[in-house]
Length: 175
View 1 (cartoon, rainbow, N blue to C red):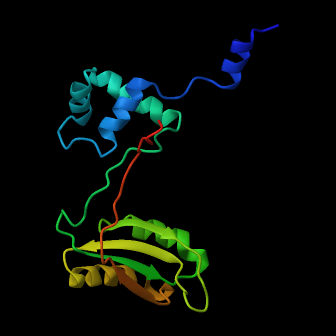
View 2 (cartoon, rainbow, N blue to C red; view 1 turned 180 degrees about the horizontal axis):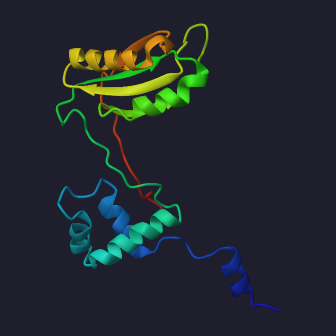
View 3 (tube, rainbow, N blue to C red; view 1 turned 90 degrees about the vertical axis):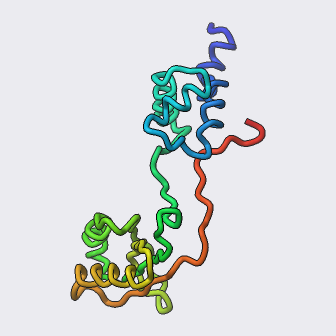
């Protein structure tokens, strides 16, 4: 018969993060440093080797502690102050096709499908368009309309009025 601790360890493996992982998360939870070699900078701050920082980040991704590592630009800081969510009414059987085409445009940061809420909300395709001015956004939205052609059955542009705080992984006070 197996010893009780072995059974418990098999059922409840050790936590996916250790104290070094916690320090790494705390050091990066507000974002990676804006340096040419951010993992090296973090490693230096924590007294670790850059290879260990990168390996730990990969492991945290693999076990699901971190879902993804990506760039979250502050469009306002980059001069893009007119940000509009363009919403489109397109045939349901064309949403995936056009979503992929629109999402690939360099001025669209994200594009996705949402359900219609008829009769008040006929839109099923959403694309975030960024520009320095509303006129620039409107010109880009016109490009989308031309791309959609006869499949565009109406659209609107909803402009941002404030910045919502974007955050990444956070340690809770009890972690």
